[in-house]
Length: 201
Image (cartoon, rainbow, N blue to C red; front, side, top):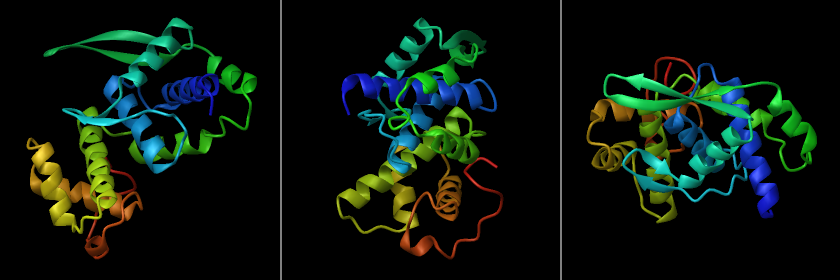
């Protein structure tokens, strides 16, 4: 995939996420949705995610958001919180449809993937997505290294990265991801999980 095609895919997918999100997403939420789309659905975004304080991160996602804002495809609003300020993104028009119409259909056939990530994780808060994406990251790293692990050992690994989360809560999120077929862990198949699809129901 060449650079121009890659940029078109990223811009289209990020704009589509903003357009169809159940509420205006912030930077962290969009970062994690992009990560989950790339690693779980194989969407060819071409990002190089590393694990940071807030979970998987690639500054290129923020660059692409800035480009989309500058091109008038989405709108960036500053939001004030008690602890400081942040950003939210909103759709501005039918730009997304135009992007998809003007882009080779073979390079951006990802509407189903966008719908999937929003159905599974669209109601997650930024904090919840930090945890979910860290679980997925740790799971993939342990698998890549050929390390044998259970849901408990995965939980301990995640808690070492995210100590602000209670171990029982981490285990609950792992079980939900397993039930939703997002993760595959040998001893988690018998876990009792309440609630609906995704992680934040």
